Length: 224
Image 1 (cartoon, rainbow, N blue to C red):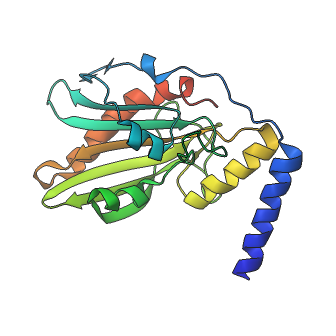
Image 2 (image 1 turned 135 degrees about the horizontal axis):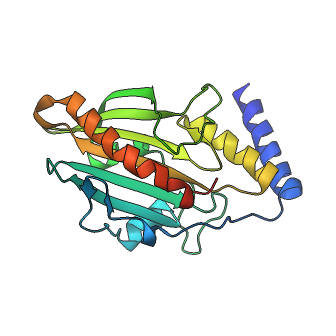
């Protein structure tokens, strides 16, 4: 049965790419070079630049990676938004263009996932459409650990007027949007903050305060 499903998916994939969407559409968008370093109550000293090897592995065509510090408390929330203009081509140097799920990358960086759940999110500016099993946008919420350090992570996939969290939904919507619109672009949005003094609720509030400021800015950089 699994073999039959896999063969069917390959056949449909070939049919879509060969007959329904011969030309891929790359939508216009703003570059993350213009993303703000300061929003109300928060400031980023400067964006982090990835080395060429990491960027090649990651496959993002544009990205924003920056730690914002709350003016009143000095506490930190790290932000990463990686935009992939195409998820079907391989770059000329052999790097991948498909978005890598964080749950696959975190263990490789030495972080263990000690709590995982899907939670509703209602930040201003989010698309209203969600995945196949949702009627509202959701994020994956992780608590990760390395030694004694604990961090809270929220992430979701965003693009083409949709927010999804399930990896299988990402694949299906990429397939569908390529057939319908000639597009496979999308982004991974991730917020990470340390859990200080075992105060997970405080970390939650801090992360959501910054997300409510930055998420409304994303449509200019992650096209709908």
